[in-house]
Length: 249
Ligand code: BV8
Ligand code: ZN
Image 1 (cartoon, rainbow, N blue to C red):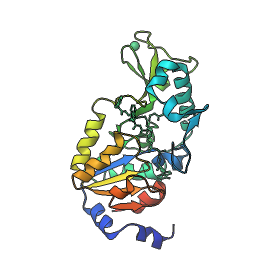
Image 2 (tube, protein in one colour):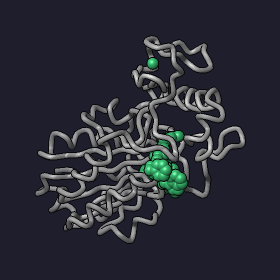
Image 3 (tube, rainbow, N blue to C red):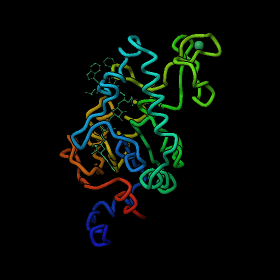
Image 4 (cartoon, helix red, strand yellow):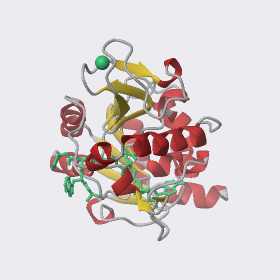
């Protein structure tokens, strides 16, 4: 992107806010991982489908009861895609912000772990993490590294119960405290970046609305407009990996 376009993209207001801010919230969705090669779920007119099932169906609480092996197969497929992928410039730029702002909160809808791989600490994962599993019966947590891959449904070492991916499926509550922490950050932030999300999934999509309510300046980073765009003070129309590095102190 030519420097003149780069600089024109970032308004004077945003540049000044970015320099002066202390309390910043970043909400990310699948788009922040797109340049790492992780397929998004929507956008560009496509919607993720797996073996003929829309992803909202295979990633739903009902499917756990209906066909737990299929749910494991779906998340094993997702993990196998991820295993050779690396964080992109968007992840690393956001990670660098934790040393620039005294109060940075990173809230993600993603389950890929790429923010942590880029060095982000204390990531608020609203929808869990595909690299963890948990026991239906005793709630024991496991890293996928500790589980054998040859069982259709891994079993709990402690109680023998079935394990499930430690991911929030459609129709399930978010992890206890995750949304509350994110909402607290939204209530106190001065600057709120919404990066790479179509903003259709709730309650995650209500986080920017809370930030708006507290008077924060909202900046969307997305190559497409979304249903949040009209709520934002600025929409930086571009790829997160190209736009976020333009924001320098
Ligand atoms: C809940 C984990 C309370 C799984 C996910 C009926 C019954 C029950 C609930 C509901 C219902 N109707 C509605 C609901 C609520 C439901 C919901 O919101 N549904 C939507 C579809 C309408 N929510 C829930 O169920 C939540 N729980 O409400 O609990 C409750 C409990 C019981 C009963 C009632 C209520 C739980 C939601 C969590 C679901 N799990 N993920 C998995 O990953 O498989 S959500 C899933 O969607 C992913 O986590 C994903 O992150 C999330 C949102 O998608 P996005 O991240 O926005 O990704 P998307 O592809 O959509 O967009 C990408 C964007 O990036 C695009 O805009 C694109 O333009 C942009 N982009 C592309 N390239 C780039 C880019 N941007 C920047 N740079 C680029 N290079
Ligand atoms: Zn157990």
